[in-house]
Amino acid sequence: MEPRKIKVVLHRPQSAENVGAVARALKNFGLSRLSIVAPAAWAGPPRSGGPGTAGEDVMARARRTARKAAELLDAAELHGDLRAALGAATWTCGTTSREVEGRPRLDPRALAAEVVRRSAAGEVALVFGEERRGLSDAELELCQAVCTIPTTAAYDSMNLAQAVAVVAYELRMADPRAALSAGPAEEPARHATVEALWARASALLGHAGYLNPQNPEHILADFRRLLARADPTQREVELLVAAIRALERQLRLGADRDGGTS
Image 1 (cartoon, rainbow, N blue to C red):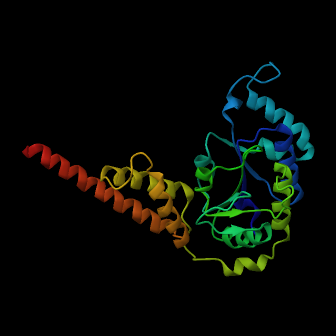
Image 2 (cartoon, one colour):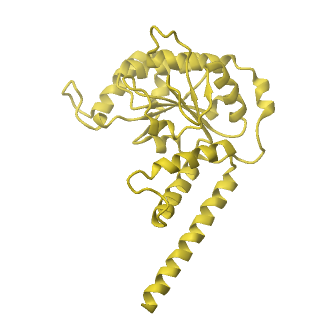
Image 3 (tube, rainbow, N blue to C red):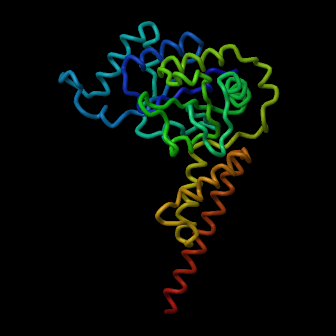
């Protein structure tokens, strides 16, 4: 396994202490890459009323909890939304206690084996939702798989940092031979390229009247799942983007001709 290809993403965390404890857990088990999707409140003033922003205050308090893992927070990437945080990832897994239609559901041990295999070909991202509500359906739609920690039904809610520690431990213990069954030699599709495909496809299909304008994501979600099962390469998705661009050009040319003869 290549730890530098594994990125843990915290989506809008609320607790500075949790953020610091996550950094400690990552360092405990040999991981170092952390991305944080900042809550909107981080742009406001700190709750203490001091100088700087709330985000700066949270990170300062997180560093105190992180102690000797504070350098992970110093190097952490901060993003405004989840799509930006996933950018270069070629495979993404979201954590949730819910069943998600059309997504493989892995426990932490199975996730670790899959991460070993996937990280041999490209960057992977493991996404953890905010403490109170976890990841929404829309956020999980950006992930190719989901991971559920098998807790007891009597108390199935886990602390954010504890959940990260469980997954990080399984990654540490994963059998490196799983990388021998890695997929195609070609680079897997990057998340940013796939999102560019969906943005163009949504606009094109909406213009053609194929999508319900009140709920365009309903059909696109099925297409997303289809593409995720196909496990395309970067070149294959780039070909699809180029094909949509060609259709866009033809539609514009047709509209220009119709406008010129009317």
